[in-house]
Length: 152
Image 1: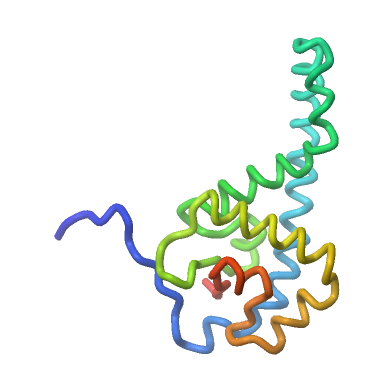
Image 2: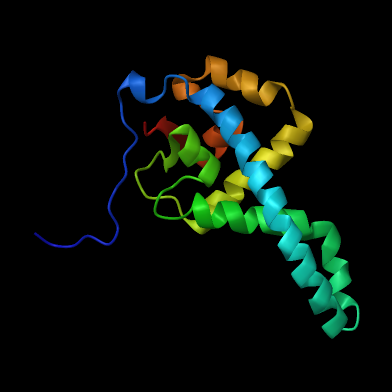
């Protein structure tokens, strides 16, 4: 048997892998943003001291600090080996690419950016799309080529 460094993680065809995914995603979203808010506090303290060292230039990053922390958090967790953030793991779901390749850091960041952009434009409609699409995929899932499945 040989070691395959790039295994394929194909999305399952069984409908049970997608039942209840939409409601689990909502609760995972809430948990993840509580975690990001808690991570933002030490990042703000570190940025404060870096700003003093850089004679105030670091203070320019404060408006974007939440976006930076959230991007790093989701990029490392969703783009990591478990393919799920901490909130997604708590809710028993994971994200997969539809082409079978594992999620990477860049795909997770693009997924997050599209979520924020589409959520700012189509706030209620972004969740309603999951009620009518196959496998409860949201609009940004369709654009990036991802699917969310149950792990538990």
